[in-house]
Length: 316
Image (cartoon, rainbow, N blue to C red; front, side):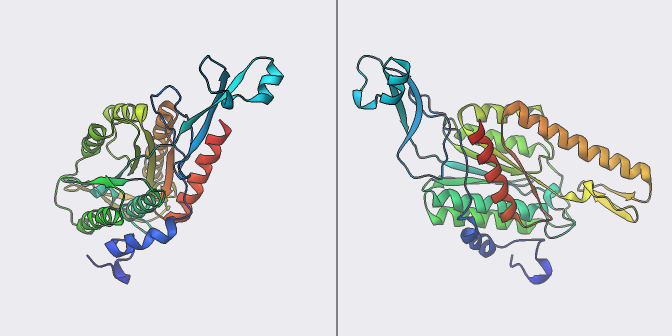
């Protein structure tokens, strides 16, 4: 579906998603490399070149290469100490993109569905630019489209096409049934593929999340690197004090009067409680949870959030 000036921010085209390649070049990811080999590394960036990465200092053991001895530390501790290195490994990446009807909301600039599409393609282009394979899953309330990881522009463009197709099908007159459980379904599909050493980027508003969602993310993060990008619209946190809004869950609609203080308070309480719950998830699972607002340009937000995540990892 072509995107015209009148639909800008409502839908996004394949060409627009492909064009984000240039804006992805200065993004950087921090990952935890969990190889189960004895000398595996713990923390490194997937956006560096291949090579050897310093892992740790440990006591010299018979059979160690004497060239690995750190002579300064050895002199200071009066016992032989070696520097251990691990080899950086290629990491296939899976990007999970939510295009359900709950994402078809936006108070300004763009719908959450468009912001999710932009974030997905910025990640995809940057991961490909680092030399890694990239693929993903695009899901809505009834379908899941899969692109297997490949190290090629064609794979990324195919992913862009899948996203744009599902994005173009979203409309205000949605007549189907919302499927909150499809989030868990697609995450299980990811878990079936990403047994270890994948980068998994989940881009959603987490509508319909459950204990199963948490458990699946926990299982995924045990052997993979998982980054959650939480797409939100600030409207619920900045409610106007007048006017009415109509909210829809698909087949059902309700009109809410924002002139009533009790209505505004109930909406505000719900939004903030949900935010606290997701932050608790982040602490419990140890996963980066990057909040991206649909009301602002996606690329600058993602760049800033990834830089902050990298700084926090370096501080550990």
